[in-house]
Image (cartoon, rainbow, N blue to C red):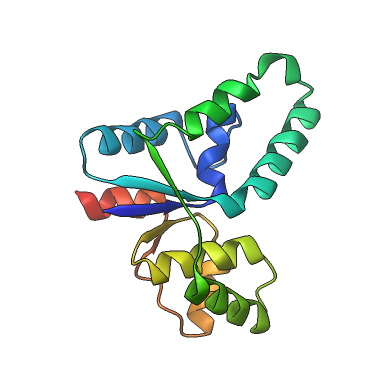
Length: 154
């Protein structure tokens, strides 16, 4: 099963806690990868958002001295856990259409579109975005939170 990760799922790599995502959840995801049940994918378009969130959180918590940015980035480029992919023409066209229909977050739009065009699960906890998609009759059967993914894999 191919899983495209929303930016939220990469924040713990930088030591940043995410509401609704526990250490146990992260270990379950890791175990699913190690056991060969899922493959995790990331898109290079997330870097501006990811690094922006990391920088804001570090400044908010005043904890830059405790964070090894190089190690976190190296971990994300570990090919045993993450495969990096780029969106293609069809993904960009769909993302543009989502923006035209009113969803302002282009990174989320591209990630969702990429998951649709590549037939992947989009792992996200963004319920507002999911609601937007539902209201506009876009498919959401592959738009899952980690809890929904775990339930599906039971």
